[in-house]
Image (cartoon, rainbow, N blue to C red):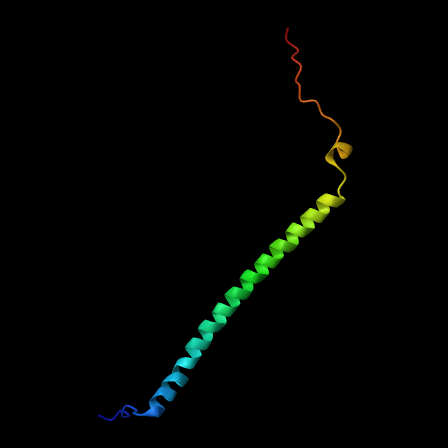
Length: 78
């Protein structure tokens, strides 16, 4: 066999951790991004709720802005 012999001893664990690091790092970065995106979505929804509330407070009451419309239909047939 011409391959490299399997490593033994304390160096083997270090080499394995170095080989596993890119995958673990990428997974952690994706988890962090998902948490951040969720937090941003919650903040955006909260800002929109507050903006809607403040708009509703500053708008005049509906009775003052819209004329009364009668929904009664008069029939022309007798």
